[in-house]
Length: 317
Image: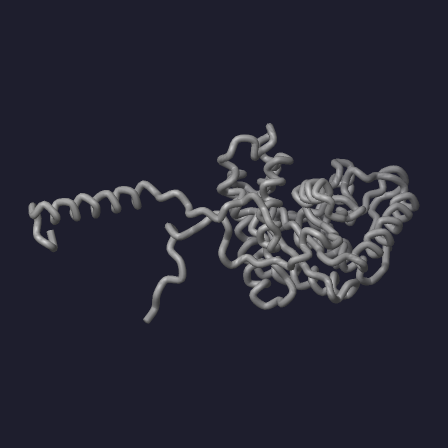
């Protein structure tokens, strides 16, 4: 006999199927990803967790995260650089970094060495996925995924070499496999925690409303991640995106721009992280409030029971 595993009205504050390693709030942590990863590190540090964001800055797409982690795994810091002089541009770096090629190369080599050394000794890695839209430079058959939108001067110089792409679920899943493999090349015993950033897209290159583009991006990341996690032992999922859908109704959850999660909002999410790791928190696993539909149905049943008690209706009335 087929029976439902859970009904919507049975949902509680804490998700019933999320279990994280017990050292998630005490062990050393390497974080990489979007601005949400930066916020998480800040809040965890305030809770005395030895957490550090990658020295190379922010990464928004699964492909750029995979590219950088594979650089750490190879222990190689060679950059692909376009342009020359003070207008040199490296797709593997954040677009705000424009300098001569030698300076860019030296700076990147230092970040790679520092990040690889930290990754090799941590207990946990947190990967936050931001979006699936990306800019690719195609140079003589070789593809270079840009971390961010290149400066206008670089865009003009590259011309048709620049392409806008939207990663499919299959492509995202392949990038996730690359991420896990690269991390474990450096640190085979580490726990890997994935999450989808609740921060909406800043902008979209697609010819569609930003809200539609944001939904398509987040749910593509989510779908790929769930398929990937079903096949990957030692990888975990933290539902920050799902919790944010509920917490966003609370005053002060968002910053004034109504896009970025406030420090107090991130702190609330970290309470859930601690709870899933088995640590004591102030969270109460309460039943979700009944919906209007549930209230109407229960009221109707109560009225019928009262009428039957008074003999005004039959037992099947």
